[in-house]
Image 1 (cartoon, one colour):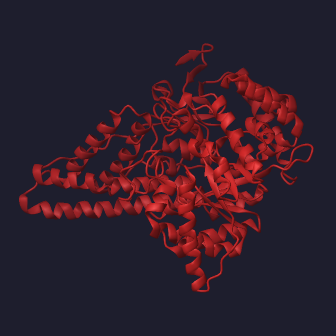
Image 2 (cartoon, rainbow, N blue to C red):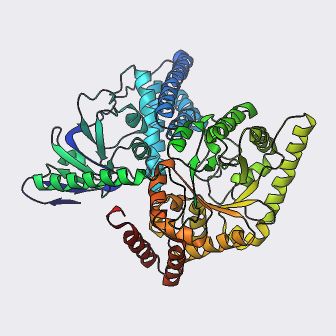
Amino acid sequence: MTTESNQNEIVLQGIAASPGVAHGPALVYLQKQLDVPCYELTKDSIDAEIERFERGILETRAEITAVRDKIASTLSEGEARIFDAHLLVLEDSALLEEVIAELRQSQLNIECCYNRVAERYMSFFQSMEDDYLKERVADIRDVSRRLLHNLTGTRKVSLSKLSSDSILISEDLSPSDAADMARDKLLAFATNSGGKTSHSVIMARSMGIPAVVGTHDATKRIKTGDQVLIDGHEGLIIINPSENRLFQYGKIASERKKRDEIIIKIIDQPSASKDGVPLAMMANVEGAREMEHVTAMKADGVGLFRTEGIFLRHHGYPSESVQYDEYFAVAEAAEGKPVIIRTLDIGGDKTIGDDKIKDDSSFMGFRAIRFCLENLDIFKTQLRAILRASVKGNIKLMYPMISGVGELRQAKVVLDSVKADLRSKKIDFDENIEIGAMVEVPSAATIVDLITKEVDFLSIGTNDLIQYLMAVDRLNDRVAHLYEPAHPAVLRTVKAIIDGGRSAGMHVSICGEIAGDPVYAALLLGMGASSLSMSANLLPEVKYFIHHVEQAEASALVEQVLALGDPQLAVKALEVFRREKLGDLA
C-alpha cells in the first residue's frame, strides 16, 4: 500500500519485520540473474562432468561452512543454524540423484541440469499454500546460486563492502546476502517480498538492524541515493521524509534512549516486586557462548538451556564429551546459580536431517521425549553428559513435551540406569539432581496433581501450550492471528498449572514468549509464578516493571483479566495497568 503525505514525501506500507528506526541514503540492490550455459556433452565425458559436480559441491560446502562459522562467532548459534539448513539443501540426496539422472538422460552440462532440477524444486515449494514453506524457496535459491557460480567460475555480487552508510532496498535478501552485509555501514533494509519468518529477517533481529519486508514494489519506487526513513516498528518506508517527519522520529528516538537508560539502572537490584515478593528473572540460552551476556544482564540463572542447539550445529548426534564440555561451560559461567537443562527436543520446527526423524516435522508428531525414549542410545549419552557436569554447578534436568506420567516413569528408569552405570565406574555426579517436567501439552495441564508426584519442579512452555490449546500452528501465517496468549483458555490453563504446582510446594517457571513480554509480567506475578525465563536482552524491562508492582495489585489484576473472557479486552486491561504503573516509560 502506498500513500503520499505531501508533494515529495511518499509512504510505503510493508510488514514490520525487525524493530528500530533508521534514516539515510538508499542503495537499491538488484541481484543479476545468473546466465546458466547449456550445451551437449559426449557420452565419454559424463563421468568427468559428475566429478566436476562433486568438486563444485565441496567448494560450495566450504563457502557455506565459512559463512556459518562467521555468523556463529559474531551473532549466535541460533542464527548460524540457518546455514546448517543450507548444507542440508546442498547435500540433499534426492535432489542430487535427480540431477545425475537428468545429466545421464539429457547429456547436457551439469550447470544446466542442476539449474533445471533446482527450478523444479523451487516451483514446487512456491506452489504450496503454506507461507512458511514458500519462504524456504529462498534457501534453495541461495544454495543453487552459490553452486552455479562455482560451477560456471563466475563471482557472486557481494554486499560485504558498502562504501558508506546505506539503507538497502532489494527484491529479496538471501541468508548469505544478510551474512555478507557490512554491518558497520548497513543502517536498515527493506524488501519487496519475504515475511516475518524469513531467515534474513531472523538475522536482522539478532543484529539489531531495522527491517521492513513485503512491500511488493519498493525497488520500483525507490532509487539509489533517495533519502529513506525505515520504521521497523510500524512497517513503514518513508521516501524523502519531510523535516517535520524527521523531527517527530528524532524526538521518539531520544525518548526511547532516555527510557532505556532509566530501565537499565535497576539491573543490579533483586528480582522482586515492589513489596519484596521474589520473582526470579532467568535466561534462555542455547550454549556457553551466550553466558557472558546473561551475566551482564544479572540473570538469576538459566531457566531454559535448549540443548538441541548443540545437536543442530553438529549436524547430528554429538559425542558425550562434546555435550559435557558445553554443559560444564554453562554451569561454570552461572557461578552457582541454577541451570535448567532441557533434554533433546527435536522435531516440529527443529530437524537435523536425520532418517530417524526427518520425515515427521509435525509439532504433534515424533519429537522431544517421544524421540528420546525410542532412541535410548542417544538419550543415555545426553543424560550421562548432564549428570557428569552436574557436580560442576547447580544443574537441574528437565524433560520436554510430557503428556502423561507414563513418560516420566520411563524416563526415570533410563536415568536410574545411567546413574547406576556411572556409580559402577566411580564417576561422580549429583545424586540429588532435581528433575522437572515441561507442561506444554493440554493432557499434562489437566493432570498436574499427578505429574507433581513424579518431579521436583515444573516449567510452563507457553509457546507450545498455546498452539496446542488453540489448534494453531504458530509457524503458519494463515492462522497466526488466532495464536492468542490472552485467550481465556490459555490464561485459565496457565493459572491452573501454577496453582497445581504451588499446592505441591513446587517451583513453577514460565519459559515461553510471554515470559519476556512486559505486558504479561504483572499477570504472571499475580498468578504466583516462581520465575520467568526469557532472552537475556529482555530481562531489564521486565524486571523494571515488576519493581513497580505490589503483589496485591497483581493478584487483583488476575481476577480482573480472567473475568473479562475476551482476549482483546484482556490485553487492553494489561496495557492500561502497565501505563498506570510506569507512566511514559510503559
